[in-house]
Length: 171
Image (tube, rainbow, N blue to C red):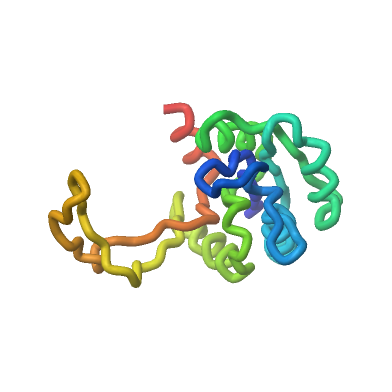
């Protein structure tokens, strides 16, 4: 069973309010990209594809080379789906973990658990129960409290059998 990681890093950082793409925002002296790559390098995928914003491929190659000797950096699209598709075009393995560089503190153990679950599932999405109270709102007025026991906060890496994700992207 071979596994690739597609590291989606082409986000502009608009919601973050940053003047630079999210992946190159620094936290404690390292970019979010570097922090993500550090955890991915501990996982040791068979293949790594980094999806970069247009114009930043050389910078992303330089940062990725600190952690990997064999990798590919490709230009992402305007949407996450387009960026994932750009990364998937390079995948040569049986399985793929799609991870967001903005989730830079995801430990190796999460990658391991998602990868292990792919032995019996075509798609695996890590999720957590929300701790916060969640309200449904209309026009700034609270309609009701949502039962948080029925909700999950979806995270990455999201794991797929490569053929399953390619079929989904083509649909």
